[in-house]
Length: 483
Image (cartoon, rainbow, N blue to C red; front, side):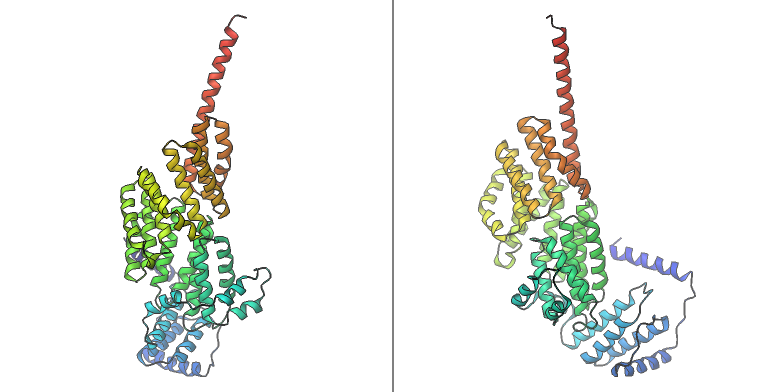
């Protein structure tokens, strides 16, 4: 059963549970609704409407009639924006079926169609075709959050173009400075959410959704998984009010799958990523489709299906090794390097490393550089070169720490401790490296790291017991030997 059908069944169950306890209003006649809708439209044209009172069921019928009446005529943008503001200002407490956002989405769709733009294109166009506002944005971001005033925020967010420019910048820098991306996204979200009538039609909901998705992705990077879930819930709610929520909801699904992966729940990821990649392609979001397939290949590799993962990586390498997807190529290179190493194709892996290392370094993304050294350490260790492997793992550990990735830093510590144990045979030296990793793996809910750390801890304990047993035997022999 698909996720859509599951959500539909759950919605029906909630409605039945809700309606069983209350008297469900039967509504009013169509003629009465039409008459009240006409009166409401007149009052809206004069900006004479009260807000703040809870919406009753028959009032919802009237609002829907207003929107449907607009759809049946040739509305101008000003009329649609007045209707949109009216819907936003109503008190929708108890809106169990999300009718507020459905209405806003319908109004926005009408507005964009009136402008001659399809809703899907309207959503993608505003997110991706951002004008150059780097000077104002750099000046705005140069102020610290603690010293930034609401006057400065109002001065910067004087237009939706400025807000979209901030969204685009945070999307690009999220992988480089995730903590900064979270802080700026949260600050902008909080400020813009409180502005009445910001932008046109569904601009505000689109901006807030984009900010929430960025904050969720950055929170996942830093293993703040509960925070990521909260941001994704906010994103899904806001996206429902956008003219075409499908592109945004697809990105919410992608980020949710990455969060599930960090929690060790890969079954749903393996089930959903092929369909999600196809959905991105159908929506014309090719880069998102590539990222989804690459993420699926990574999960397949971790689950042991290395050959299938390698096939996907090689196919994506052909697709991204061009100017069109230049920003995605480093990510594909790093994953392919790791996949070749895991599959034992060390010669091909080293050739790839030598050829593309400058490209990865130019990308300037700490996580990518750390991943490269982590894989290089594994390759060197597997080919018997333990001393350089130890140096590579130490470099990876430092890079993960600089990026604020404590869970991956812990994983690098586990691999470093394993290699130290293999090189020196000293359980104490390995344990001193492993101790921090154990604490971090438990704190950050990193199941893969925790499993590896606990397995190594068991091996260290076994070696300690063996050594203690040997020492005990030697001591007994010494005592039994004649003096």
